[in-house]
Length: 238
Length: 226
Length: 48
Image (tube, rainbow over the protein chains, first blue to last red):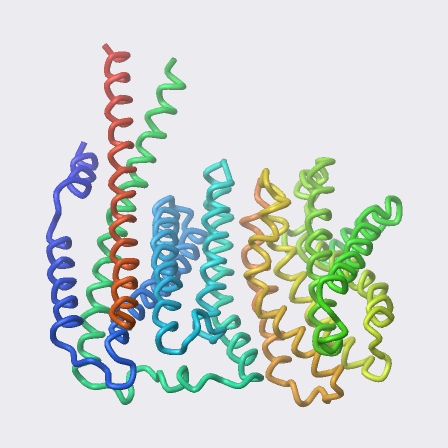
């Protein structure tokens, strides 16, 4: 009964985390649009960066959580870790898609092309494909125990592949003339302190958003489990 | 240790004996690879682009496509005849089953490559003989990486209803590093560069081979669990 | 227009995307809770 109450609470009333996220997000928006100075070379469109990079960070972070939960699942065999891996993968794919959408929108006015086969963009695309496959695998396996085990293996393999993909794509492109804009993009260094601060606020806001979404998504999965359990009980009793 | 090796050898022998009887796998892989090469020749205008640049890519695409067919087939046969159940009931170690399957897949694919290379040489007018040994090494390392991760994923996909489509969807994004590295190295070899010029690619492929064989050994217990 | 337009579209995509995802989550949760309630009622009836 107590468990039911707690799950109800998560799903219906916005808690402290919600208000914290909303506040940070608001602060980030104010910083992005009102406070931070416009970048000289790229102009106003450079403001896309302040949510492009946090989205990318979030996607990687989510996939890292998938990796860790997958290992813990194979080790402990607890349904809990499977839920975390599944939810995190779904959120990761959502934010990875946002990165892939905002990337070209940023690239078009700055580089003059929609898509550059640049190392970071390309590895993000491959990553997206891997985790789409991961979610498809989850959708196509019926038995719950097999689904969790298979998905965990793919979750581990997929994350271990990331550094290899990164290096292969990086070296792949160095054989061609490299667009100068990309190397000039250098993160962190040469950045105005106010820009760095804005990026940090935005990163914090998105990380909180991840926690919030994760909580919601996990609650959803728990409800699903509860329904399955009740259905099974009903089947056996009748 | 001897026991373990015997288990692996027994599985490889079984696969090769089955293949000798039916010749199903090899012929379908080979014909498919030739078809892929021919389709590429029709769709990519080789009179404009130099075949030395396009060739390695076409060759590896043919290998990867027919390789996926081979991987799918090899586990489908086990599934269809209930042979997998039998394998799992034997006292053989799960990793021994993996290595046995890996070696037989590697064997079939290498055999297929031995036949596809002359075809490739003739169709693309590329002389492979002067670069034979470096090429052999590169092809072996690339095929090993492909089979290492492919065997793991195929053993997993074999239990799905939609295994024919799920294996490539899972496999191809994961083997992007191997595909890029192999094509690059083959291209460099055909351009006459020595192996010492591509140590970074070599290292990458070796890392791939080691990491995924290791991961497969560690996780195969969880997949081959009935 | 130009740059401002691109910025606007990017914003639209990000916030729209996040909002849409939250919306689908809510919808799924609501549908499930309805199911759950129904199931509980039925099992309660069976118990009586």
